[in-house]
Image (cartoon, rainbow, N blue to C red; front, side):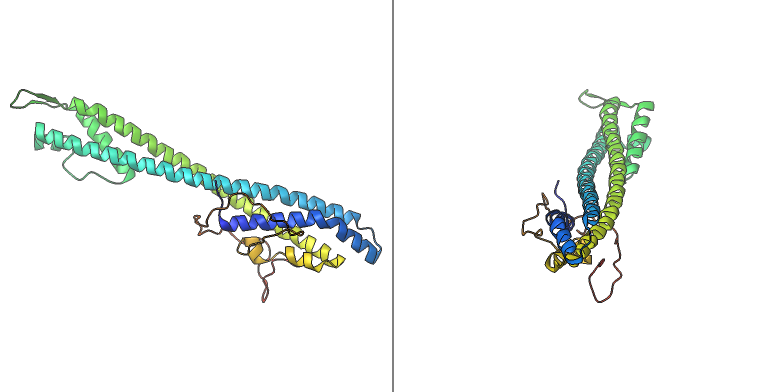
Amino acid sequence: MVISKFVAHQLRYSRAVLATGELNIEPATAAIEEQFGNDGKVIAEALRVQCGLLKVVTDDFAAADRRLAKDLADDARIRAKCEECSGRLAKLLVSCRTRLRDAVGEKALELYGLKGRIPTNREAIAHYAGHVSELMKVHPLRATDLFGSEFSSDTLVGPLQQALADYQHCLSEVAREARETEGARNARIKAERRFRRILVGVAAALEAHFRMAGFDDLADKIRPTRGRASGEEPVEIAGDGTEIDTGDVGNDNTEDGGNGTTEDVGNDNTEGDDSVATA
């Protein structure tokens, strides 16, 4: 299942931060020790722990986003199937009305409540079909035409009840899928909040470490900005120029307009700058 362009950018930025940290924490620590004479091993170890946490939340966010995308696709498929079942049920009701009118006359339509318009509302048509089939069972009608052919309303009950059962099953599937999709959406919101909070924090810590070491180019590459954290600004390379693989990247036609973000996480209230966090 593909993910949106904006989420792909967020994941690419996170993986660029991780790759840059993995390659450069040790050299930066050595440069700091050389310049200031202090032991930077404790700081380096803390940064490695933070990078490990960032990897975990990055994977969690990617998984949550993919699960939501899958559930949305499943929801659309099940809703389409439900519409097909609804259409079949409506056509069968029209067919029942036609056969009853031809065989028995208008009185049959009045008896079974088939004279009015067939409802189009999802729940209403199920109730309507159930009411009609029950009336047919309670008040069966029989007739013989001029050619001696016999008609019985009992022949309509079975197909109508089967179509109704199929439709009711579809309705239950739609309700179940809606609950699952809502759960996946809530899980994704939580995963993204955690991901963005930790992403900004780790990127800011690494930026500060690299600046202390004098590695300003690296610090600028991973500097956490609003655009990078939200996925609006693509990040193409890691610290060594290596392409960052984000897996399948789809378009940005998600429910929220393409941006996988649900709310800003971190400090986005800077002015005159696009920084989310600074060292």
